[in-house]
Image: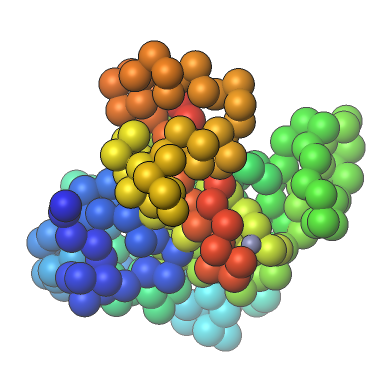
Length: 242
Ligand SMILES: [Zn+2]
Ligand SMILES: [Zn+2]
Ligand SMILES: [Zn+2]
C-alpha cells in the first residue's frame, strides 16, 4: 500500500486515495503562486487556474494556468498580471488549500473550474439528468447543475486523479464525493462485508458491468475509479479502458 495524503500530513477531505493516484503531484517543487521552493506541489495544466488578489480591491481573480495571460478584475476592471513563471505552472499544498490555485475537474455534472465555481453552476452536458439537484437550462438541451459555491471551491482545492480517459468526479447527498482509489478485485473483496467483492462491484457499477469482473479485466485493461460519500458513506464509481 502506498501512502495517502493524510499519512503525509497534507490531508484533502475529498481525496483519500494513495498519493500515487493523484495527477500532477510532485514531492518537491517550485510554487508559481508564492514563488518559493516547497514540499508537496501540484502541476497546474489545462483547466487549472492561478488565483490572484486584485491589487486595487482584493477580489480573487482566476487566471488560466495554461494560457498564462493576465486577467481583468470583475469588480473594478484593474489588470491582474499572471505571476512570473518559467517552465511548469505549479502550486504548493498551502497555496492550493488557501484557494490561491484551482485544479479544474470533469464531473458527472460536466466540467467544474474557476468560472463555474464563481457562477455556482457546473458547465453541464447535453440532456443532463441529475435527480435531486437544481438543473439550469443553458439552451439547446444543455443543462448545468447548481451547487453551493463553497463545495465547488473545495473540489477545486483537491488534486485530480490519474485515469486513462479522464476524470468523472461523482456526487452524492448534494455534494462532491471523496475519491478513494482505482480499485482492483482485491480492493472490492476487502471492502465487501463478507468478502463478496463481485456483488459489491455489481452494486457500485451495474449488473451489466459484471462481464468486466468475470473476464478478469479489472486493473488489466479496464479500470474502476471509486468514490465514497462523506455524508451517507455510499460508494459510486466509473470505469474506463486503457
Ligand atoms: Zn505556494
Ligand atoms: Zn479589483
Ligand atoms: Zn451520500
